[in-house]
Amino acid sequence: MSGAGRFAPSPSGDLHLGNLRTAVLAWLFARSTDRRFLLRVEDLDRVRPGAETRQLDDLAALGLDWDGPVVHQSQRIALYENAIARLAAQGRTYECYCTRREILEAASAPHAPAGAYPGTCRTLTDEQREQRRATGRRPATRLSALVDTFTVHDVLRGDYTGIVDDVVLRRGDGVPAYNLAVVVDDAAQGVDQVVRGDDLLGSAPRQAYLASLLDLAVPTYAHVPLALNAERKRLAKRDGAVTLADQVALGHSPAQVLSRLARSLGLARAGETVDLPLLLDRFDPATLPRTPWVFARPGR
Image 1 (spheres, rainbow, N blue to C red):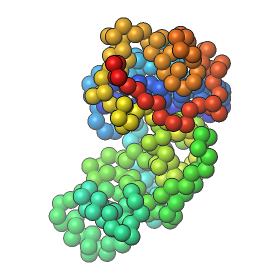
Image 2: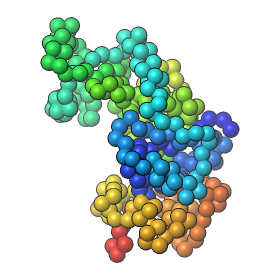
Image 3: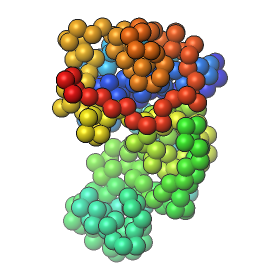
Image 4: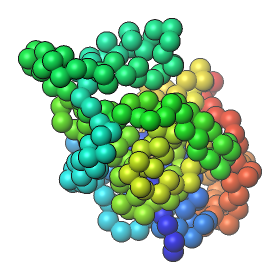
């Protein structure tokens, strides 16, 4: 096999049907292109006891398999710190003392691009930095970006140009930030195909640009439509029986749940029960829906 795809959940709770649908798609994309399929647990933030075990059990219950051991970000801190040190040696980092509120207020100014950090701390003098350190506020480490936008190619959406700003590399609490960690991990694991929800499409230009600064290969992207509730908002636990355990409790087998996910992707007929080998035989990215899947509660 050449290259790899991956699924990288955060162990903050059970996977809902939208997460499982994305995992199935990531597996299909990888296996249909003769890639390895890897699992990475992104556990740098909130971790709920038992969540990882339940997530892996749910994936296996649907028939997904993966190659090699499950990787945990919490065990890879040295890799992230090395990447930050490389960027610092290039003069591409600076300390940021902004609070979340200050960032939101500054980013809402008329001259600031929507959703972009406005660079407030980039031009602080040494004296100004000392004054901020004296307050006891711990600084985040930000990237000093050289561009405002970057273009990536998505196999479902074509070329996409998005904002690049001075992303956080290390948070004020000392924890490496998501945008850095995911770039370093994908390169280190040989991941050259990233399949994930289209809510993360806006992150791709930032991450691809960061990879280019670190002389790392930029992966192929496929940002897939999300699962939404009846109000067309992102699916969440409050939307009813949205986890595999919920569905099993209602009398639906994992095979039936997989078949429902397959129907939402146009890969199965109504009433048909399918498995992953059959879906792999039918899989064609060109035929995938480009609009969200609306999951309604029973009775609606």
